Image (cartoon, rainbow, N blue to C red; front, side, top):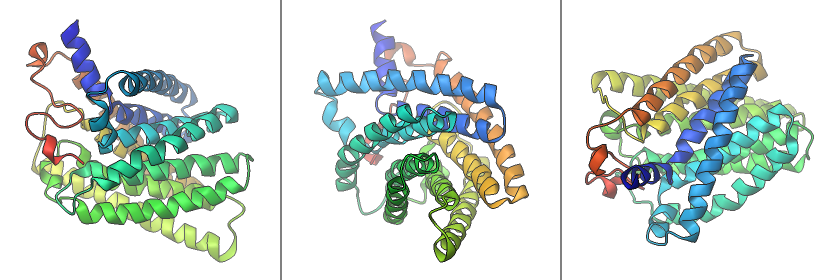
Length: 331
C-alpha cells in the first residue's frame, strides 16, 4: 500500500490539475454540443477529482515540507488554477453562480501565488511545453470571469476578463521565446500545451466577444483576434499531430494529461467561436475534435490505471517533474 500511495501522490500533485482540467473542459464541450447527460457525468468526475486534488495540495502545503518548494515552482502546479477556473465555468453554465464565484476567488488567489515563482524560474530557452501553462492559467481565469459577466454577475468581471486575456497573450509570447521547438518531436505530452494555450486564448476571446458591453470597433477587434488565435491553435494541432505520427511516443506518461486538455480546449474553442460568430463549419469541426479529445481522455485513463512495468518498485514511471533524469528539463 505504501508503494501505491507514493505512486499516486507522485502523479496527483501537482500534475493532477491537468486531469481535472481535461475532464472539466470535455464537460464544457459536451454541453456545447447538447450532450447534457454525458456532460454532467464528466462534471461530477471533474468535481470529485478537484476535491481530491485540493485535499492533496492542502496536505502538501501543510505537512509535506520537503516537497512544498519544488511543487511551488513547478509550472504544472498552474494546472490547479486552470482546473479550478474551468470547473467553475461549467458550474456557471449550469446556473450555480455562487459556487462558480467561489471557485473564481480560489483560482484568483492561487494564481499570483503560483505564477510569480514559476515565471521567476523561467530560463531563457530550452523549456518544455509546461512553460505555456502560465498562459493557460491566466486565460482560464478570463474565461470564467467572462462567463460570470455574461450571466449577469457584474460588468466589472468583463473588464477583469479582458485584462487577463491581454496578459495571457503577453505570457504566451514570453513562453514561446523560451520553448524548445525540438519538444514537438521529443516531448512526452506537454508539448501540446503550445497549441492548447492558444486554444484557451481563443475560447476567452470568444466569450469576450459574446459580452454586450463590447460594441463597435472593440467587438470587431475581439472577433478578429479570436479568429486569428483559433487559426493558430488549429495550425499547432495539425503540426503536433503530424509530429506524433512521424515520431510515435507510445506508452503512458503523466504529461499526456496535458495532451488531453489541449485537445479538449481546441475543441471547445472551435465550438464556442462557431456558436458566438454563427460559423457552421467551426461547430462541425469542434464536434469532431471533441470526440477525439474524449477518446484520448479514455486512453490516458487506461494508461494510468493499467498495471505498468516498474510500478511495484516505484521506478518505472515519470512523475510530474519528469523522472528518469529529466527533472532538469522542467519549468
